[in-house]
Image (cartoon, rainbow, N blue to C red; front, side, top):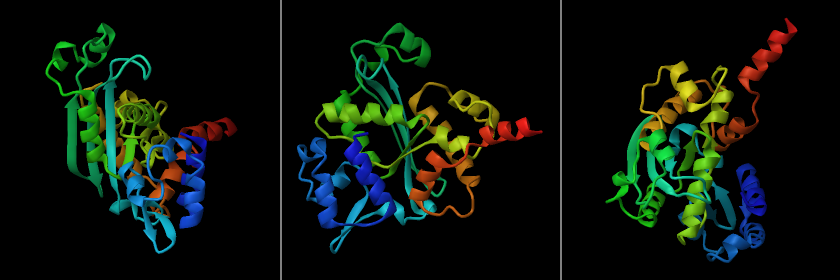
Length: 262
């Protein structure tokens, strides 16, 4: 993430900012300043940041919203290669609130070629994408589906950055949604020797097709629910959850340290 943007989001996650301070700091983010009118709060919300202006204060809603009142969007993508050599070929996502699925998104995206190695991994072939909608159309539809919900994924930086870069290239701007990694959250709430999706599915008895977007998003949702059930009772707000997923002690690391002392 852009450093100045990260600094601004970190400030908002801890306190409200005056409108003047917010615009002053936002003006230092050239990638955003040159893309849209930063003084219009609605533009920030279009890019996924759940902020509101109350009189002369800018508030990040996830700072004060209860976890069970937040909409989370659990996302998974399949791609034809890396971010510089391939493209998104499938997006699967579910929007959830209070442990309940409220909507689903699933779509192939057209690509004129899928490498054999990707077909072997995902089962998706070039022929499967022959009549799929263009990637830009799929990205626009997904962006509308995502809205200002919190973006959740297993190894979130891969999916988030790939989608954000793809949106930017298509002229839709970067993603600004708050995000949570279920790998990092699981490391702090579930005892396991490994935290890959396959390993956690086996440990937790989750049955689903591996390496298909919607199926993997559903599996990540099951992990997310278990992690939420294992949170400390003192954790109430969404930003507290985000911070916990990044900074709390890892369970398996603690167990290894305790075992070494015995």
